Image (tube, rainbow, N blue to C red; front, side):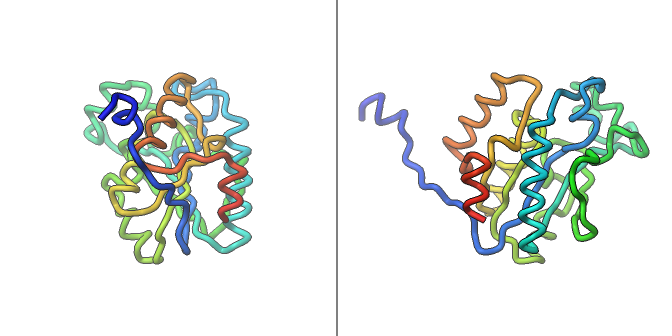
Length: 200
């Protein structure tokens, strides 16, 4: 086997199933407001997610959004020691709130988490299965952190996963691009916003 053959791992696009859900990861004030130590300029990411929400709402597909909330010092203590800026995400903080530019509906579900993945310790997989969800459009912030962890866990829970690259963002552009490349190479389908909307 040549080195070229080894580098070109065969993979098949999975797309979406019959009952997809939109999973928006941490599009909260703490990540979309550059004045927060965790934040960056994310207007285009917010707008892409707004468009996706409008389509999911219009087709009566489920929408889930995550936020990070800490109630006590012992929650995710190692993670928070590693990234001390996370300590601003305490219950009741403005930084934990979903960005107001997103068009929330009463049917949307907000998942509170303490670690990177939306699946870790949240019961999310069980909620999705109770609705017969078979695939996910995963978006949000940040690509190299919580989006990546959530997308990989989505696959590991046996959901097809699509990531519209325009609807994700990161403080580090190189990390953003590298993460999307790696995710597409091994785990999920990385598409443009337009390609994702066409699947719906």
